[in-house]
Length: 333
Image 1 (cartoon, rainbow, N blue to C red):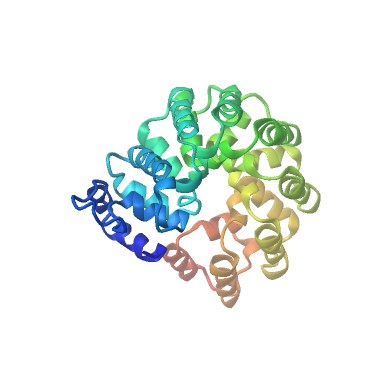
Image 2 (image 1 turned 135 degrees about the horizontal axis):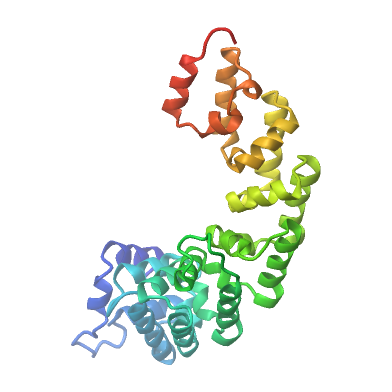
């Protein structure tokens, strides 16, 4: 049975996997595929007789089935096996290590079974992580972030659940080598005070996965020295919209900035102020939103830099509202 055929089978009828777990009555035919484990085993091990591998594959499959939602795993197991890296678990997973990892996430992370299930489905490699060397240090780091009274939903359990379920890959990063240095860099570069880093991580934890040297550093340098944002304005922008730092410098930030200045005729000072107030002006699609709207405004003789509210107002409107707004503009432009 090919990978595609088996995948189609489990995807189309996921609970069929559960019904196939029980061996067939006829065991005289030694070559007959008698269970799903055997199908998976033959696929993974690429052998006809899988007696030497059957025990490990069966153990892994049953553990994953229970983890992903019951006796047969249902759609959860099917989704997991479709993920990149999901199939590898059947041939490499240490069930004892995975069980310890799941227990650590439940006990120290305060996560419900459905939360762990969703995290594993999104990032199967979590099950290969060491509970002592990776999971616990990351959870301790996240709990150490200072809270601040102005945060909403600042309960520690809810904070951990939000971060871990939203960005499960954060658990795959080394706490001493990645998370702590990145957090320290952001704190120093933006003059963050108690609670600021927690707010940023709560809104966009993926920021901590970015490289300081190759990613965060060049972006902050561009915002401060090319665009002219002060450290206080940059801090305010990142606090408001942390995803600003997740934008690609070469594919988003620089081309969008250049178009606002060269294509839309804005002054850099005006764009700087707009970014400080509404950082999302750099996050809109250049080809699908910014350029088409600027071109339509130019046809009416409207200059983006002279519009009250600037790019934040113009680009923030829905397409229908933008059309209505454009039609209402006076001809004195």
